[in-house]
Image 1 (cartoon, rainbow, N blue to C red):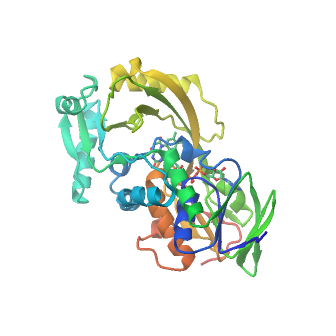
Image 2: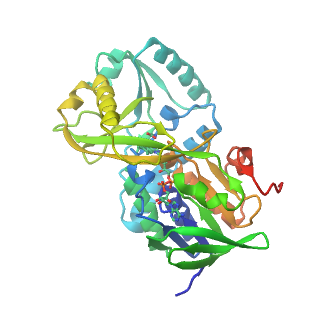
Image 3: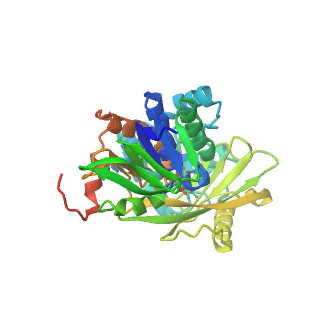
Length: 378
Ligand code: FAD
Ligand code: GLY
């Protein structure tokens, strides 16, 4: 078996998939290694919102990256369908960020101003106008901000779409292979050791989500990351209840193309425990019923959890290791990895090819937060 590749991707989530797809598209011979199941962690658990405006502060450097990524989804949906036949279930019907208090209304005024300064639309609605748009909303809703460009996809389908498309373009994908350690020679990466042997490459990219730090600590780099558990559940309703995604910082409802509504999500830092708790589900049910009372008539489908990869300042790492040439890191996408996956795939492929990315990545460098225990300066 040939064990030498142009690039090895560690992790089979949406980020690893997006990078493997972009590298394969550029003609590189790629190996992707996943310790468990493809899209079996955060990427399979996500609600799939593309909430660049609903979820992110327009003043954050992440916002620019997010809206560039959001704009890529239309073409990407066609490209993945053509390459692998996978339908990512893109829905472009906007998001309604709801106000339940006077404070929420003030916050919407502030945010909408910033969005408009950034050249985006953000329409402020009264409660009555919001209910005209979405009749299932409760009278507790006193206002809303309509964000027409924030859409949604199926997160598991997007992840599989990237992975299957990469495979169709020649990428070798292996499940059940855990990367235990990285090999180096003269300050350059040379390959990886797994539970099923060694593989060689002069380019390795770590996309291990919340589990990334474990591998990199051995390289003298501490990422200062922590896991954040999230629980969700889904219901089916007889007739469609909602058109747009309904968003509040504490609870969201995402009407999927297949007729289900995903309700999410809890936020529990510092745990890798993936059990669904009744406490988590009760709190989501209460919040969801407050926003959309008729959700309680929905038929229960299932509940699940995922572990989000978070960094100390909330921004992802998209960079090359300061000490080891050819070792790249793309992780820490926290609550927005689905949204950020198309642009992450492109810019990481640029970095790996030695090209200058079209997007400014200075806010996502490793040296902003990490402690380099080898203390070799750049
Ligand atoms: P993961 O999906 O966790 O993938 C990492 C993979 O690497 C895993 O499969 C793991 O097994 C593998 N791995 C780790 N270490 C190794 C190793 N040593 N060897 C081999 N394999 C390894 N984002 C949005 O944009 N929109 C949303 O609506 C949204 N909703 C969310 C809802 C919930 C409940 C959760 C939990 C997350 C949500 N997110 C959302 C966030 C999004 O899911 C994550 O940011 C994204 O999935 C992270 O992708 P990833 O590939 O980095 O990590
Ligand atoms: N972005 C939604 C979540 O992380 O729950």
